[in-house]
Image 1 (cartoon, rainbow, N blue to C red):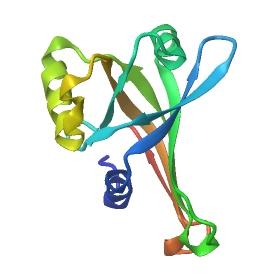
Image 2 (cartoon, rainbow, N blue to C red; image 1 turned 180 degrees about the vertical axis):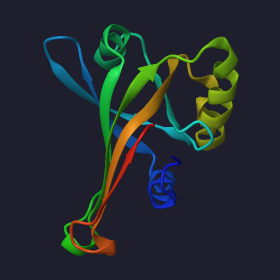
Image 3 (tube, helix red, strand yellow; image 1 turned 90 degrees about the horizontal axis):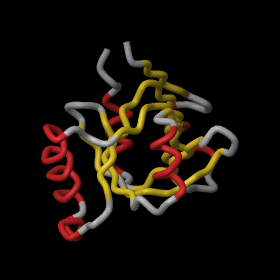
Length: 141
């Protein structure tokens, strides 16, 4: 099942996601700039190997993430909560992911960090503009 067009539209309007990782004893959050690959339904981001979330993802690829529209107006609340698997791309996917990321963030051409992919397995999109508490759920088949 393809991910809903409204969810994709929301993802493409933003550029920072909050990534939650787990090292086996503690949960940790980090904010990362992302590019989204619609074709493969993955978020692409860079992370330095000295960061806590990098270390956590090496131990446990299961992550959660969220993207939110900041607003105090209840009728405009929008947000995406998701679960997925964070892995480093294979050599085959490396160039593809880098190209997508650099297209969105040209300054990343000089980035020395490591590339990561977050494959979505579950997404819950809330959009009060469609009606109070209106949600769309997507699960990977």
